[in-house]
Structures are given as C-alpha cells and as structure tokens.
Length: 78
Image (cartoon, rainbow, N blue to C red):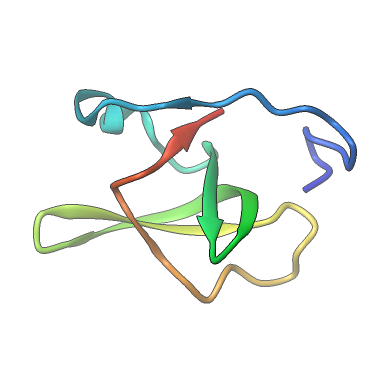
C-alpha cells in the first residue's frame, strides 16, 4: 500500500459508528484484521448482500483484489 501510505508509516484509525457507514465509498482506505494480521487496503468495489454493503478491497501495490470481501461491520475509515 504505497500510493498514500508507505511501509513504516503510522496510521491512526477511528472505528465508525453504524450511522457513518455511508461515508465508505470506492477509494476509501479501510483497516481490518484477518486472523492476527492488520490489513490497510482501499475499497475498489461495493455491492449489496441482502441489504448490507459488501466491500471488495485491494492493496495499492497488489495486482489483484483481495480474495475475501468485507461486510460492513468492524470497519475503520482512513
């Protein structure tokens, strides 16, 4: 992720309240945890899953988007 955030940078995050989820759009940087690893990736696509947003993410330096899609809960906005 080296378009805006470089290796070694410090990232400050704030957990969104449910009423703030509509702030997440394509291009928003999200912070999430996969197992014990913290991931900082950009939203590249948003779809709908039974009325809930489903976020597709990709690291800026990755060639393909992440295999795992993120549901709207436990997201942090950069």
